[in-house]
Length: 109
Image (cartoon, rainbow, N blue to C red; front, top):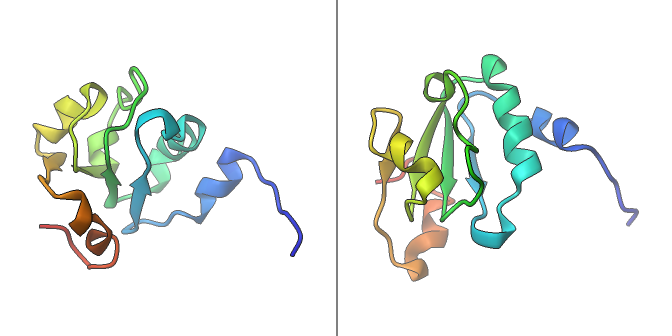
């Protein structure tokens, strides 16, 4: 198998309207990928972002982010607190052992 490399902008072109996108959190938060995805916000609608403790100051502080993305957070970080407490997001308290099940069901609780 050969390694295939692409830019963050190329990688997020695979995201379509209506998709669920999991964002790893803490020190592994993929800042370049998230910023590239948010740069495409005008092309996307109803994209659900499922996350655990994302880090990155002002990461989601972009115009109209809530018009294109809905954030379901399993741990509310400072950078998404405003979205999680608005009509554009939600907080899902979950035990880590049940987490992987949320990646395969059609909608989170």
